[in-house]
Image 1 (cartoon, rainbow, N blue to C red):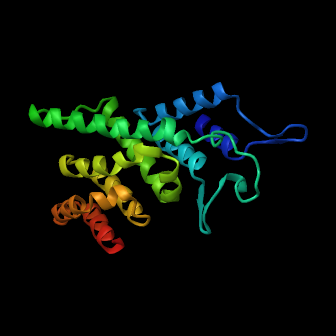
Image 2 (spheres, helix red, strand yellow; image 1 turned 120 degrees about the vertical axis):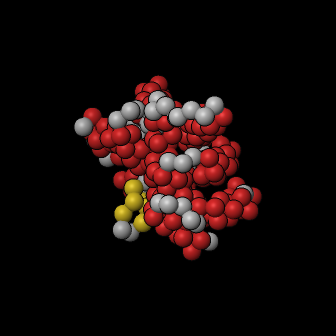
Image 3 (cartoon, rainbow, N blue to C red; image 1 turned 30 degrees about the vertical axis):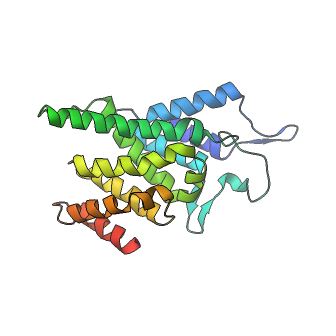
Length: 225
């Protein structure tokens, strides 16, 4: 409930007669960003889901049947930036954080496989699920805008997704990785073009996956290409 209230305050901030749209002090803005990133590592799936929704809405906009729209029409109306949109926090905090979660999970999976151990359901696994869920939402809402605001860290996303598809056996991880790839295909960033041969190889290896959902997104990837 607290997360939903926060989302409403950030995406529909009050407008005051004397000072205009609500603004956050820099230290408050940075604190909220860090808290939102922290929700992606929470063990509760509902908390991760709300955190992902808030992050995407504040970064790239809100999806509707008319397409992705800037929050409260701020950009379209030439209004001042809304809370959390006053700088490219995707470049400074969010995207590096998401990439670090993916890379940490890859390292953990590889270590567990090398030692023939089961992957423990600890904070790294929750962070993986939360970061993938957030990437799916960001890329689904506006992949092009997310890429523009992410900086160099964006180029590390595709290799991480492909590596996860190669080494992770969990269906929900593979499905979310494929969803991310499908949404990236639509804007075809340079990082995906550079990894195209590897991407096609991964799709080929997953074409016979036992999960119907995985096979569905493999087909969707091929059709979208």
